Image (cartoon, one colour):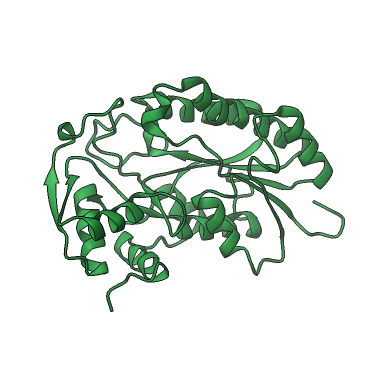
Length: 294
């Protein structure tokens, strides 16, 4: 840490959903947050990563950057691997060299989805496609670097920003009389604002000191994508009819986990944080978007 005790926190992927949410929740922080995206620092360039860490004497790195196009990754594996594994290795090695903490965001897609009980951190991984494999490889790069780390696996991320399921559904519901949504994929939505607040609390309070490792974080509760869409329609007052369908009705280049509920017991017990229920957080997001039915 700097001699003036101002903690320097570098956030990569600052223009994404989580990065923008972190920017918002950290506005009143006494710490110094440094938000960058590819235009400011290309994290696939090892020299650029090392230079930024050294110049700013970074204490914490929060890696929100990722290649998240699940279908496209099947055709662009080198690009996905470059961002999800190689760049992560550069960040981890830089963190290890300067003694910084790395907070790395991972995904439920590291699991195969064949179970019917919430996945715990120690459960075997079995990614089904390129996206999941490269994210799991990124996790391994962090662990093998020897740096201090928190790997936070999350799922079904949405927010007021960028492209996500909630905003896509709102658009489709305003354009169509009916929408079909799969009911045979079950998980838990995660409001990026909740994840951002949890991360801020961890890195600013030193709560994670001595508690490094892998943790799961999503909102509380369980639903299918169909259930999620129905709740979006109900809360926003959309007149569009939401119909259930099977995944096979939407052929895809990659198989998605049928069940990806994450067990958050370890996170809650270790850090004593209460996690909001998914419907409550959805209501907050829709209100922020100005579409919540009063």
